[in-house]
Length: 153
Length: 283
Image (tube, rainbow over all chains, first blue to last red):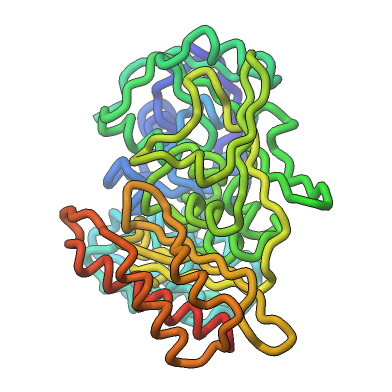
């Protein structure tokens, strides 16, 4: 077992983990943050995307030990403590940008840095940002519409 | 599946890393970004007993401009190199690697060490006459890209060696990069079927000079299309010249067959992509 310190959604955790524990499984099984999903375990589907020190990464392609002394942000960080949805989540719901919801956490985390840049977004930029996130349900257009709208004040 | 158990080492210095690789040899795998290694471990295609994480070694995290070359250290993420490496062909090609999230973790040197014949980084290194710097307890070796990439996932690296950097000399100023699937990111954009990395100058008369054409996905390693390069040297970038170069590329390759494509399709792809890349470069 290896001792790690990791900040998740603003909370510091000191944990002993097996080296082979994936970051995704640390989040889901050890910390109960099941928003992050594992779809393929190969990095292709994007359902496991979280922010590591602000940048999107595949939590299924990282060992928890690699996140020692780093900060992770998951989808659970988006809604506020009262449960009020983040503007991006609200826009996604209003545009029907999700059905089964399995891809949604990874989608949101892939989009968030782009949105937080504050620039109004064009559809092509959104499509490029979510190119690594597979969705079986929506056909992507509603997701793109939601993000474009959310990017405009 | 979950990866099998391993001993995890995270040295702070190169010397510790070399000692670990010397001790464990083929039982050890180097962990940098892990974007090639960890999928293999998740599928249990790879099950190394020891992982040596090199990302906590500060001196490996640097991009160094030494004047006569640029060195990209083993710890440099692809996203960083895409922004800051100052190597135009590399920056152009990195946009096609996987997806942004993959590039935030994966490293340039990792792609070189992994030596997937359809990968972008090895083709770029070949096109720019790059070198791979290997170090171990036994000292340093610097291997030209052409000698480093031997076959599928096979390089000149010995089990006790670490790829500490890749070295890129100044190269031609005009670059182009094409691959299929062209779509940046995307579900099939992860792995190319075939592609071309191109660099060249146009001399004051507008003729091709210093032409480099490297192909990916058409052999067991990246290959230079040297016949096509020779054909283009001192030639004007006219349609018939470009077409002749594209044909020469097709004639020079003997691509393998796999679940994604047969040899004819890959041959056709690199020929068309070379023609388009040359037209773009000469425009």
